[in-house]
Length: 299
Image (tube, rainbow, N blue to C red; front, top):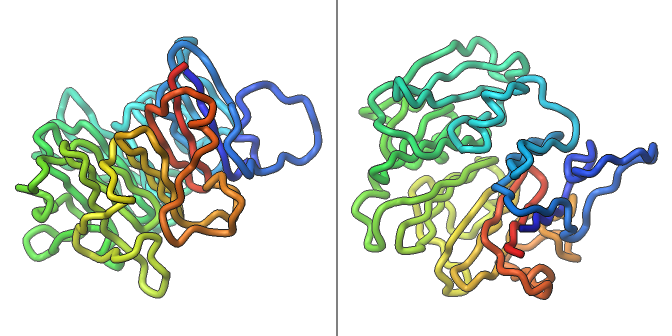
């Protein structure tokens, strides 16, 4: 398997091989091979640090994030059972108790926030975070959201019966024509949900900012990517990357740090990435860091 990366590299968080050079690292303007091996999982990447699980164990690149530097949290972040929101709050799912524990990190930007424990959601299979909150997916396909009420569009639901700061179900994602939700993604101020029938839904937004995806609102809306079925998806601070069932990767959004891997300033429509496909290895997964993108291939 091979892992390719593009985008922000200020802390060498895209470089897994030891680099003794003292010169300032450059951003990756196009996708470059950063890791290869018989087994490579989806990476987890913050602004300064990237983690990847391989057959040789968890590999690190960049400057360690001291707020989450522990073997327990690293494993859960890579398993999507822990997440850190952009405001510094960390949520972690405890599989034995079937509870979510939420607490501010030492570097939290949300003053006065307290540790909390959430119960009654069911069995969590994926936990993701956006700038001011969290999204959880249960094994029965239900999507739960919670966070800062000032950015209610990212909740994708009403807050009458369940306040913004406590988990509530996104009811508009239930009973969809193409089946239940099987994967979620979130970052910045956008949330994605993918159905078992390969349809993509999105919601969110920030007041006063241009939406990354056209038609984005506070309610889940179907997103059309060149009339393709979607197999995988991920969100960065201001960009989105998806993988179609045909094995093609498409990107949209900001490209200030090269996170789209394309020779453009930004993409306001979906842009197909062809460089990786030309290598002849099928793309099996995609992942976005805050200002970076990763593509995982077979072979």
